Length: 213
Image (cartoon, rainbow, N blue to C red):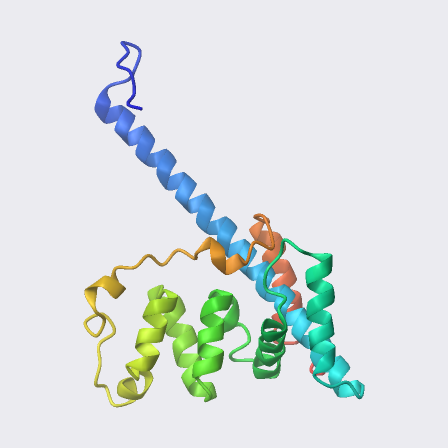
């Protein structure tokens, strides 16, 4: 419904400026909140992966334990996604892949879980993972853009200086927004203070983390 003209309404230019500032502030707050949620989600998954990995190494537990965990967690938290057996295995692999890598562990915090999964599953080499982790953060690649870059062998071509990131992308992919999607948080958390998420992450991922984790 359009605004009703009113003699008390400020000049149109002044009003548009005010509206623009408020919109920008809202978008900024959304981004900060989503980033904080993403950090806490990654911290949660890191801890779950560590706990499963440690317990499986210390006990004679097979794959059945993950199936049981998935069933019990979904029963306890029925409205929360991300706890399927398949995803718990991915979470464990996520921790295994980065827990002893001081160079890559801090980088995974910079992108969403879904993008981390793409890199984890499609890139087997540490240098290749570092390349896509850094470029995804630097250029604000969406999941689709990231997949396109991997399938286009951007890493390999860059080694031989054969590509340009911007011109190598189809326009419809290049123009996709870089703001993380709410679906990346899997509806686990409401927005948290950024300082809280950063503090929790730094405890787990600082260069001096527990080497046994």
